[in-house]
Length: 110
Length: 114
Image (tube, rainbow over all chains, first blue to last red; front, side):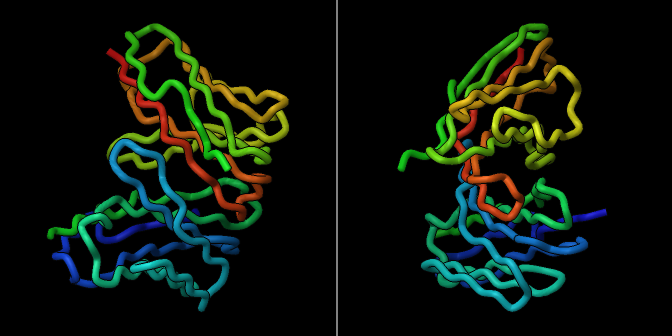
């Protein structure tokens, strides 16, 4: 069965302390992996799409990478405004539905 | 370009009542998906509509239904509300809903069932 697991569940960083969030998956025929950011009580905001192993995407302090088994969201020198839940979702096989992870709740202290 | 809009933003209902939520997708997007989000359960897929047809359905009881209009706007209905239906309901639109095109989310409707 296709599965997506995000770790850690929660992460607390000091401002400027870089770290990485993990999204590991067991699927057949990955077609696309998506990263979203969600603030409390709001809808997820799209960040990146990755389609194949080795691909990298970057935006401000965030960088997403992917291998055949996992994807990382690297956060460099985070700021308090980066505090949010980061969600990973992927599409695989012939299914048009996305499979969602439970997210990593990130808190960045000033 | 306007984003996905959802109305109402907040709803309070009592058990046994029914509710209708509305979603207007990004202009040009023909696929609309609905999700239920609760703490600890993450995003649970309800259904997806494309060109007024339901193409995919999640594992929810028949009390949850939806439809899509010719202008791609979509509504979902929950009948005979239960306490467990309290959640954030999210609508997402995409160009074609192939699974590889990006889904863009609305702000959600917070439903509280008392």
